Image (tube, rainbow, N blue to C red; front, side, top):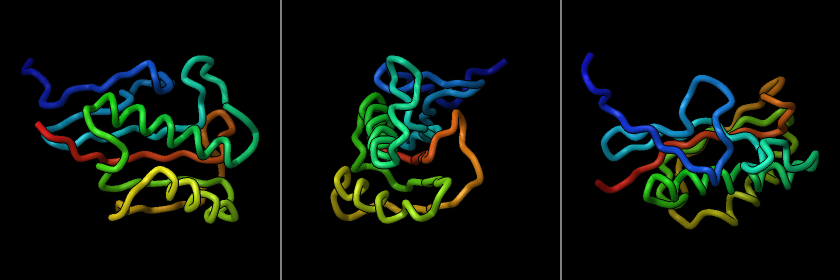
Length: 131
């Protein structure tokens, strides 16, 4: 069996995977960050029932994985954000603006019927890194 052409990224500063997947995978100069829900990395419980608190935790988790990959959240090329209620879209915009600098990354936002553990938001990311 040959060696994999990718490297898993792991940090205790973001929630552990809750299934058969890696927190993130690096392939070349790109890191694919798995969907992050608003879990506290220490307790593995949702941080709150409040949408804003959940959204902030998602971006804290994503930031921690960007740092573990040797970069930061401003090197994200694309986010995909999943919301259980699209009425929270403007809140996501405000929270993202607090984490990011221009030029902003590409993004998709999708309303879904449910997310793991009853979360109200989930986001994944594609990150650029240097060698």
